[in-house]
Figure 1 (cartoon, rainbow, N blue to C red):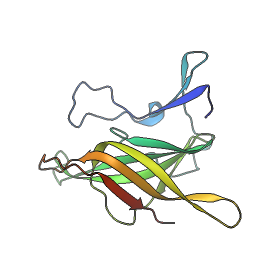
Figure 2: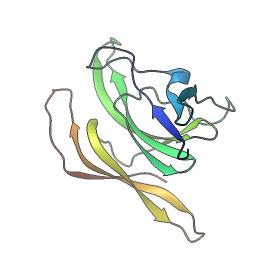
Figure 3: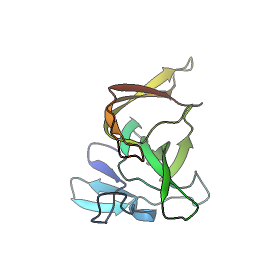
Figure 4: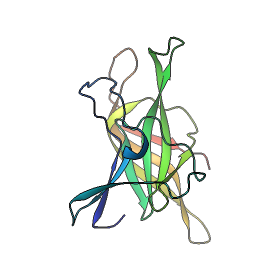
Length: 163
């Protein structure tokens, strides 16, 4: 990632606004070359490397960690036994390696309700060797939505990540 490239992460081709089908596979992450005005698909350099791709990058919140990594908050649909009805939406955090086009998943210390329209700010921990690691995520605003359809505004949440 640099000043001439932009990542487009997730989305849908569906016209449905409520729980549309997410884009999957190689179309999940696209690179836009701003100078040339062209798109290319982010392809894994090694199929045996990294965690599985996130299953649902609709309504995600993404932020840059460094020049090679982007973190994404997304939600996974948990279905009831009938396989059609959504039982819950579980928030996940994954990191996309732009150089290798691979994913790695980070565990949350406690569950987080599904939300959208929030500002996400990474909080880092400095180490003695001069390196830094993603330790917490600050979430400002947003609309958590439960299965009941009720909305509840939240002004501030701090989410701790496991190391």
